[in-house]
Amino acid sequence: MSCVNHARKVVEQLRVESGIERIKVSKAAADLMHYCELHGRSDPLLVEHRPITPPLSTHCC
Image 1 (cartoon, rainbow, N blue to C red):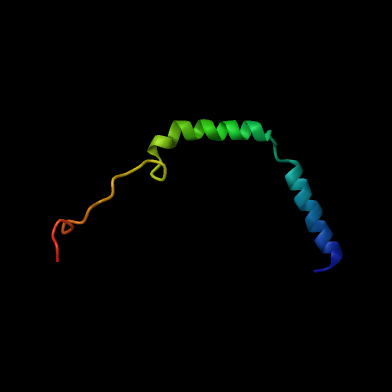
Image 2: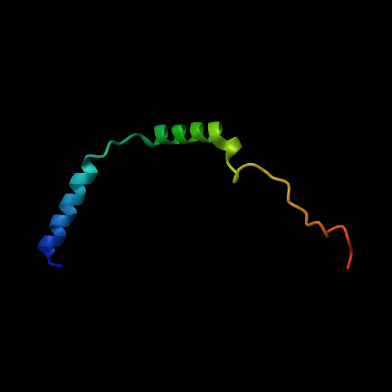
C-alpha cells in the first residue's frame, strides 16, 4: 500500500471518528454504575449460586 493510499484511509477514519458524539468519562461511568445497579441482580456472573452437589457425593468409595 502506498503512502498516499494509507494517508487517505487515515483521513477517512479521522472524518468518521470526528462525527461520533462524545460524552464525558464521568457521565459514562455514572451511567454504567446505574445500569449495573438496575440489572446486577439478574446477572448470572454477579449473583452467587449454591454449587450443585453430585448425587453420589454422600457415599464413600
